[in-house]
Length: 205
Image 1 (tube, helix red, strand yellow):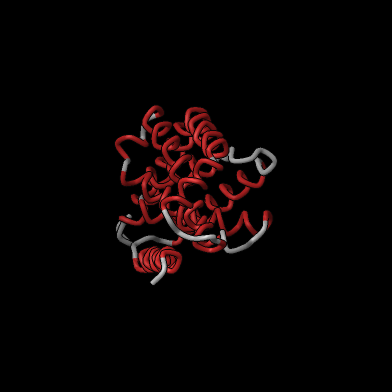
Image 2 (image 1 turned 90 degrees about the vertical axis):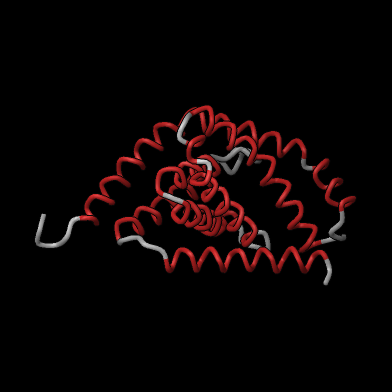
């Protein structure tokens, strides 16, 4: 099996696993509505900053969603943000990769919650994702458009995209420092109310 096929099949498998986790996991209508709304708002943020290459609030919003609402919600917000925003910016073979990667960003917000709950920790994780996201997209484009999936081709692509990756990382850090803490407090308060309301047994409240 070629390297390109491995990349494509792995991405597809991860998307299916993420979808299954969302479908089978817990979560009431309020959490589903919040996740959908936040996914749409994150997509709007990407579209709003479309004129500035690589600088978008999406990564920060996905990380905060995962930190405040959990890995499943973070994954859903990231995937929805990519899918909805590409309806305006253009769908293509890059859409599944963006859904997968921003979903992974959201899940990492929960995995690294001790760090992503703080302003500085969130900025560090967001900055790291600026590079990781760009490198992963380079690998995806090599798998879908060629010329080949190899270390030489990957390094060449990363060198070519270095300025865009740096811009993404710097933008992520700025967004994390400016909007991250306030958004986390907002979502954490809402999540706490949802958990309390779903924990009340009907007829006893």
